[in-house]
Image (cartoon, rainbow, N blue to C red; front, side, top):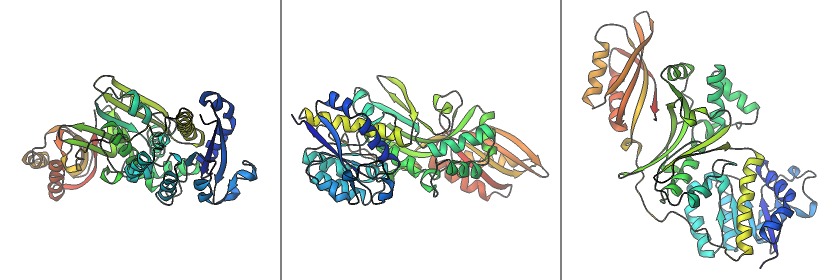
Length: 427
């Protein structure tokens, strides 16, 4: 039984410093739980000014390879982010027989399969709980606690930045660009917020969750993605009037035709638990055939919440080392299922357009939809101005391809000025 387990940390930014803080503060507790001393041996950070007086000089390094090759380090914690050089660092650590804990969603959603296979070949652990949901335990429950279920749907709010923006728009009537600026000033959004507001961050996370839930590899590039930049106060007001809330939804479903994985703004019923999730909080809703419906809720980002998840992984790896059970966490993607394209999925829709205010307009629009098998559930005329009017449509379930074909034809009608917005509706 190993009595001294060494930790190396790659990166000392927001999350890395939180990991070091928790591991240092809880060292004695971890030792009692693991049955061995768990200590940080070395921390690598290129921007060494970040260390300040937080890390003893003898534990500081400017070279990640010192951590990867250190003989006293058993577990490497990667909190650098991005694809490279993180991929190379993790690959080399695994090749060296080191166990790895990472919070890297982008990497695990694109190259996680290869790294998990390498870890299995080398008989070491690769854990990534913090890659989705920050401090929310979700990957381990999906892999272990819900293994007795056939999961039919995973649906969640997994990006705190966009949820903060939408909350501000709803609660304070704030324009989107103003809410985004406030999020940046508070540190909730990066200077370049593209990954958040265009949905790429959420796409990486739902790819990881879908891979685990459906036991079949889904990579981020297969996730259909739309962001929130087209959402307006008008859409929010109409959604509320119709009994819905608008959220950036990460969604994964499985049926007999394959796996449907996507990220986009969606209207969800105002009384659904996800509709109540506000600010920077995250929540993930899961449906299983045995358990029914469960939801995991909590802080989705931040130094200590993310570090909490990482330290949980470090504890499990350390316990495995202590009990000689290493390499026990094999990849759960043992099937190969089709991932649907967006054209193949079915959904309900909300549409807002501006059209001429004269007899026969609605008939022309309805005829086009009818020809493509698109059934209108409701239509409301709003904001008549001069000879124009705003029409708000609701639609029954329809295949995306059919709906998009209709929209192209609708846009060409002489009675339609413009299609203002289209938002999917999830019940």
